[in-house]
Length: 112
Image (cartoon, rainbow, N blue to C red; front, top):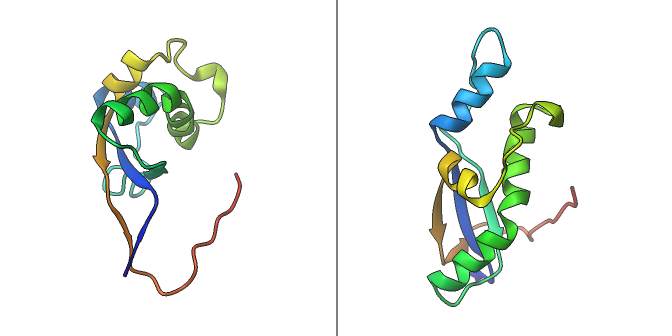
């Protein structure tokens, strides 16, 4: 087992996100696994919660837009207000300061 030099967050959509997503379609649906398997994001190590909060405030829009895109690719249908307050209302964030690698193969990084 190895510990890696990253921290992680789990991003869990909340009711405002589901309300937006369900209003896009005539028949609301939930992509398979989206509620049961929320995404994890790796981030640089943070010394404390204050540093993590500063990082999140600086980087929330990338996460917010990625989550919107994962449901609906047409940016014209995305909510006009995508500020930090809206992000925190739309998503629950769980923070983890230790990330362990239990795999035996090297990490592979792919650019998106």
